[in-house]
Image: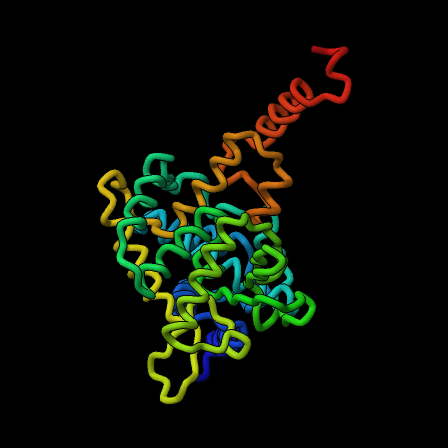
Length: 332
């Protein structure tokens, strides 16, 4: 007898994968997401009363994550599974396939017990020194650009790997579905985020580094960036003078070599996320307003990084009023 529930699950999975491919997500990422979501569906199917797709609720995911945790899954694994499921059900909610608001006000998996990895200022400077010793090559320049963008914007790995770059083009000419993450060199701006685009102004230093990198790629590949606007282009497997977006594994390799060569960095698990963690945490420590941190990072909540978000916001307001009050002369 045909398993109607399994077939239903498979149908929504196939629609999601199709959307990922249309958005240019690389094969490895699609494979990881598909595997994580399929395991969740297999978990649901082990019960005699399997929920139909539209009746899946938060409690099902909470119980699944708890079970994985009890079975020894690492914090980093649980975090990845959580965000894969969040993205999948976000897609399904947008398409009205499941509108149960599963992830509304739920931003940090099964709690704040997943250990985050951060970089100290000394470690960041050490990494920068290592990059300065590299001989000039496409690989070394690519690693340098990855390092600059990660530390300057606090972007995610996917946002980094999928970046396009434009020189003389208006934002309105770019299709957000085909190029959600891109750089406008002349405007000194970078746009990140698949669903809600966020703009981060770029410094002259970053823009000059990007221009030098782009010029180098043009000199060795004679690449037409108007036709192939990839920040990280690849010619691998192509017969003619055409390019595609680089496989993220090549970016992984360069960044792993960089981090592994730094003796002062001991914890190396969350390779890309530790740059993002540090970016967000340092802004919190420096008292940057919550709204600005959210706009720069794309986060809707900082509860993942702050134990008591209400107290944090109160302390921040108090600090602003003490230091920047418009009638400070009266109250200091």
